[in-house]
Image: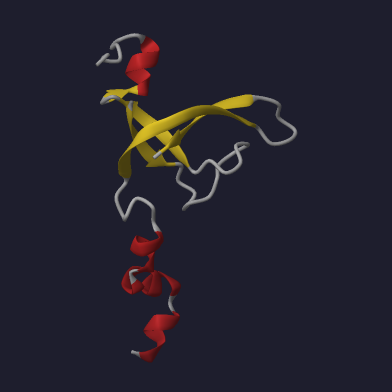
Length: 102
């Protein structure tokens, strides 16, 4: 009984701090408004400018899957855009759908 709180998984599940600290509040996706578009330089040894948005045109955002950490060669960026104006990025890229203009 006493040793439960020494178990990392038990503590994480029952303290509720994961929900408080999570910017999505425990959900898998979140909606937001794009404030600006910007380019982020990739870390060494890669050389590229990755297209990013400062979020806070409506976008649906999902996590990268590294528990709040940046992924790959893009520093600081922890989330990826999944949908723009309720249309998936894959459909936009393949040309199956067009972004609705308002």
